[in-house]
Amino acid sequence: MSNPETDLRATNGRAPDVFRRGAWVPMREYSDDEEVDFAVVGTGAGGGTLAARLAEHGFKVVALDAGPFWRPLEDFASDEKEQNKLYWLQDRISGGQHPIEFGANNSGRSVGGSTVHFQMVALRWRPEWFAARSKLGYGRDWPIDWREIWRYYAEAEDALKISGPISYPWGPPRGRYPYRAHEINAAGLVLAKGAEALGVKWAAVPLSTLSAPRGKAPPCVYRGFCKVGCSTNAKQSVLNTFIPRALAAGAEIRDLATVSQIEMGSGGRATGLVYHRQGQWRRQRARHVVVSGYAIETPRLLLNSATAQQPQGLANSSGMVGKCLMTHANHAVWGVMEDEIRWYKGPPSMTVCEHWNYEDRGKDFHGGYAFMSQGPLPADHAKALVSNTGMFGMQLRQHMALYNHMAGLKIVGEVEPHENNRIELSDQTDELGIPLPRITFSFSENDQRLYKHSLQFMRRALESAGASNLIETASTAHLMGTCRMGTSASDSVTNADGRTWDIPNLWICDGSLFPTCGGVNPSMTIYALALRAADRIKALAGRGEL
Ligand SMILES: Cc1cc2nc3c(=O)[nH]c(=O)nc-3n(C[C@H](O)[C@H](O)[C@H](O)COP(=O)(O)OP(=O)(O)OC[C@H]3O[C@@H](n4cnc5c(N)ncnc54)[C@H](O)[C@@H]3O)c2cc1C
Ligand code: SF4
Figure 1 (cartoon, rainbow, N blue to C red):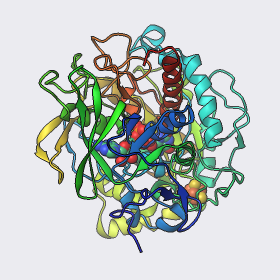
Figure 2: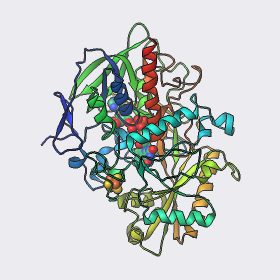
Figure 3: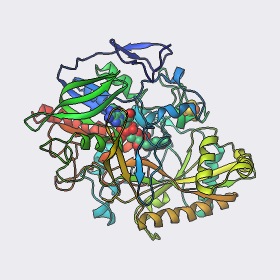
Figure 4: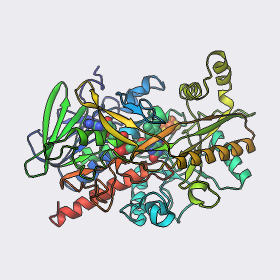
């Protein structure tokens, strides 16, 4: 039997059918010498979505991913350790005052990108965050009006059949979610009880997993392994939504294809990609190149593609490639309930409180945070306890024996964009000879005030819900920034479409575009940017402006 981690699956005119064991769907293929319209690096929330939509708009598209092409039904196990195979595990050198933990639980390496193992929380941004500087007095303004992104949120929610509540208590009114909300689990009800005791609103989390059948995908069966890959296909990831659409529209997906450099021609335009697949270095010619490798790999690739004309890396005349890395503060409070909770039953976060995203009064910090109910799997939770509290041996065993009675609340907390938080190339290289990224990250004083506020508030909420033995943990989640979009070539890497200012046929489409990071999970905003970018590209092509 072939091994998807070493043997190509998307080849010889076919690609895996993600909905059937051992089955295939036809795939169009392009030769390396054929100049495709778009070569896309990365097939996650940004790249996979864009590839599908561009192919549907009639462009010739090849999308390459360093990771395997999984069939969830046959490749995913209910086993935390085995499923580490979904993550980007290659070395990243992490420093600064608060080094980010990389490896498992950080970013993905699969066709479908990080959405294959993400936790499915599908939230929209508060409108004011798109004009944070002008409306709220901190951070930066985005170059796009919130109404436009909100229109694309609706489209992305429909494409993913997001299951959400009939009315969402924060922000402007929105239409009904395509699918009904999931029934809330006991862990979610703990948040509800705590929020009500403190007089703040709460809601069912809109989730990217089905609450009713959709085609060949069944509804969620609440088995709780979402964060290590959903083996039933209930989770709506890029792998089982946009990738099949891309293939059906004539895009080629190349699995196990690692791009090392973007090639430049004499006229200041990109001419294609250098990539490694099955032991061979190859070159794909393209009229346009899109980089969608996420917030570490995208700047890494641009920096590693430096030329004599652009010695600081491609598209880097502003000096902003790799700068202003953001992550979300992901601090948590955990407690023990008298009743059995069995928090692993269902998606990890089933209820949310966005009070401190929408309330600007009574804060000693700027920015916002959401907090959500939790349901970590055992190894994941034990690891958080060991690294945060030093608990070990018999003490850890005794604490973990309370697993079925535990509940927890965790934030997604906004972090400021700072130029010192950055990615550079180190002198060390990976197995293909590509320089490893060196990452520097420190929380600012404001960031620290924000998460301290959240810890106090969540502590009160958990205690009000009846929890005892409270424990706090610190962590980070998500990666954003490093190639921000903006209105000026002097202080940003791309315009609002993700088109780099310096190289007209080089584009970026992923989480690295974010100028600020808001206080909710990023994927819906990445999807919205990708759908919008594809429509803008179509419009530009129609006007002869590509
Ligand atoms: C554990 C976890 C849980 C999360 N939960 C949520 C959640 O509940 N809600 C939410 O909104 N967000 C969540 N996220 C974040 C979300 O998954 C990401 O923000 C989003 O997927 C990023 O999209 P992207 O397109 O920028 O990158 P990705 O989706 O990571 O895709 C990048 C792809 O590029 C490929 N790639 C990179 N470099 C190269 C190269 N040189 N050559 C070829 N291929 C390359 C990678 O293999 C990868 O497949 C979670 C993330 C993690 C890690
Ligand atoms: S809880 Fe639902 S989405 Fe998560 S792994 Fe199970 S079936 Fe998939």
